[in-house]
Amino acid sequence: MIVKALKEEIKKVQETETCFIITPIGDDTSIIRRKTDGLINNVIRPVCEKLNFKAIPAHEIDKSGSITNQVIKLILDSKLVIANLTGLNPNVMYELAIRHAVGLPILCLAEKSTELPFDITTERTIFYCDDMFGAIELKSELEKKIKATLNDTEIDNPIYRVAKEKSIIKNIERLEDKEEKNSLLYIINKLDNIEKRIPVLKTDLSIPKRIVDIKLIFDKSIKSQYEDIETKIYEIIPTCLVARQTIDKENEIFIYNLAPLDDIENVISNLKNRLEYTLNLTIIEYEIFRMHLQ
Image (cartoon, rainbow, N blue to C red; front, side):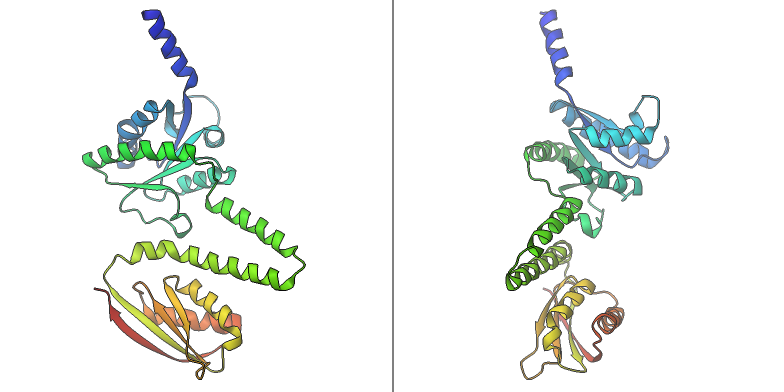
């Protein structure tokens, strides 16, 4: 009986994969370290062990040699990586980018108060409450997400998406039919604009604040430059919809904003400067309309 149990334990150890944990560390006695160790020891490690993974954070590496080299090796070689984005620690973001660059499975965690940077808001992230009940909720969710992450064969992260888009664009550029080529590039640009705006809308639409719509009046007809203007406006205000004015007013555009805007005057100033500098267009007048979400 003892021999059988020992064999099963040895087999389990042999089958155990590595899960490297990217996390803020802090000094030994810091609040950050206490939070990190609490999260690892009470949530991440038990879940990983249940799924035959050995959870290893950087501050528990006990081998001699360069810690940086060992961390990068673990990021590249581990079957799974879990990144704690709470606090948006620069080292954490750097290590996250390394894992993204090689297109390997990664799962992100963050406290619910964390506001993720724009380019990673679409990542597979679990938001958790930093309390006892939050730990219980996180355990269940983490196990599900690890299984889903490992079963997902499609690579998807900001670095891979850019590389893939460049590859697609190169293939489109080889097309001989100029009209077809321009149409496809136009569609890709539109989809890219939509993708950039979705995360912001997800964050802001739930907030019942004042919404501001804007009408821009230009010094000349903008009919031939509408698409370029639309793109520039989306760069400044990603939470809006842009609409042309009626045909007899070819020098006007409406910006229907879908979320609250801070510092309207600064937004208008940025729009003026961007359009004048890039498209040689002058906004001679603008009108602001105020509404409220219920």
